[in-house]
Amino acid sequence: MPDRSLGVSDSTPWPAGIDHSPRRVGIFGGTFDPPHVGHLVTAVNVLHEVDLDVVLLMVNNVPWQKDGTRDITPAEDRFAMVAAAVEQVPGLQPGHHEIELGGASYTADTLGVLADEFPDAELFTIVGDDAAAGLATWERHEEVVARSRLVVVDRPGEPVSLDDEIDWIRVEVPRLEVSSTDLRARFTDGRPLDYLVTNPVLRVIEARGLYGVAGDGDGDGDGDDEVGAPVGAPPSQSVVSS
Image 1: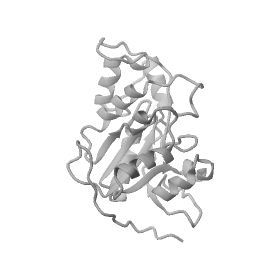
Image 2: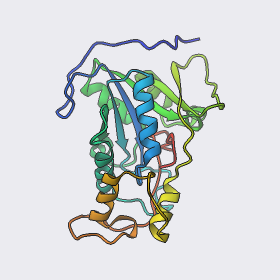
Image 3: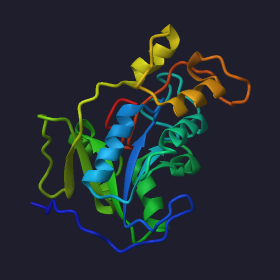
């Protein structure tokens, strides 16, 4: 069985915006449509438990399993929301790599880019237990396992089991039943969003007129009401509904 201890790799330079050279980088992928407190709770808990230098909330460009099933908020709008959500959270950063790659988003592609850009950093792919259980169905899942260490986010009392040959870490996070589907409905019917979406995110939504919210004319969103979820597995799956 693989060692579950948390090793440390050599340091590597990091782009502007992070004030030190990270040795341990987490990738938490998702549609983030919209990003909510469940995403933040997951990210900060993994950051702490796995002793990461940074967690990138990697915004999917096109979550292909949702493409054509409903309207997806434009990627740049979703990135703006994520950037607002993490701006004041130490150790969390928004990830734009999958948007720059274009097309459908797959974790294997993202890890390839990050491995080339930061060859000395140790990479950690953060997923939920449901996504981890379906690892064998991921697009090029062998590359994901080879290029990164899997961090499986488990809910209390619901342990997941993976093949002994897979190098992975289990992190238990609080059970927060927050769903982006429900949040989008709340925008439509006027139910309260207090403590579910942070104020900086709400300001971006209002400025860009997203989810049917009347904008102030300064944003470039298209006002779509429907949108989606998660880390680029073959279905890009996430830890919490996004």
